Image (cartoon, rainbow, N blue to C red; front, side):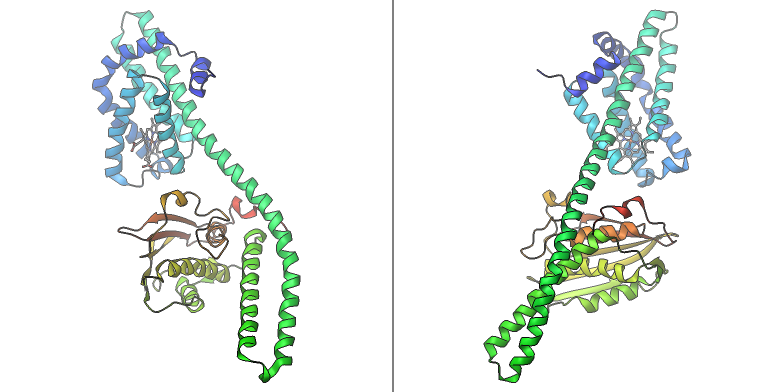
Length: 398
Ligand code: HEM
């Protein structure tokens, strides 16, 4: 059977049965120290302003993490170091990736554990130099394995992102040329429609009129789709100016038709500071989100609510919720990817465009299910002017 990645890693660092036996022996000695070590570990993280930021949940999260670190140490020294162990460690690694924890913090953090456990070995194996030597090297090997797994999860994430950006770039080139090519025939249809209407004048019967309207409507939809596609790939430069989100939201409200039975509520926007941004593109963000939310509730009726607040001196948060069915778990992961849609109409560009515009403003968007049922989008905007991020330049075509 082919060697698994974990087996290969173990072979690489030279982790074998002797290490396993030595770690199990160390486990008995070290276990009483786990609560103290996990305190030292998180105190060290809290001392550093950058690392501390990752612990957003404050004291209660640190309390929980201290507990999980003790379980982690227990498994570290007790094994079994099998595929299930590897999978579990990958899951933990992915948690760090998900919270965008910079990987360089891992080395310092691992060193705290290395240091604490080495001190325990030195104290416990006084006068037994061979056992001490073996325990130290086994500890070194298992911690190297742990770091390797952590870095592997970061690499895994990088590869996914790379694949995504390659897909986007191919998609961008294709879409750019098709979009441009379609503009011409649509323009011709529009002109001919105009001429037909003016020729037919008042004499035209109702049915013909209805069909002319339909053609006009459908051309409008096709144009709208092409504009979204081209916006998505073109990276129109941002026209930065002071922007009042409240004003932008009011504009979006005017642009989106809402059937009866859909209630929209707004809170907190009026008191927010101005942002530096492109009002037109930010309006697009709100229009796309609002259209989705309205579509989610229009059949049964429901509420769309928008709440703005200043969560930190330099950061505005906007939460948009609707009482519709929400987004199923299988879709959530790919919600912001182009061409991901569950709707009969629309081709899945609304949310990717929203994310792109926000990223170019130095902002973020995330989806979280609403309590009860429904969708919840959380947007963050920096109040201070932000440089366009590295994501601002992909993909590009036409
Ligand atoms: C040797 C390094 C590290 C080890 C062994 C480790 C261990 C763990 C474990 C076992 C979990 C899972 C908790 C659970 O099951 O709920 C976890 C999650 C977490 N760790 Fe670490 N950690 C390390 C480094 C760090 C560093 C340096 C930070 C912060 C600067 C950090 C912040 C977090 C946070 C915030 C979570 C929760 C993530 C979430 O809830 O999705 N960790 N870590």
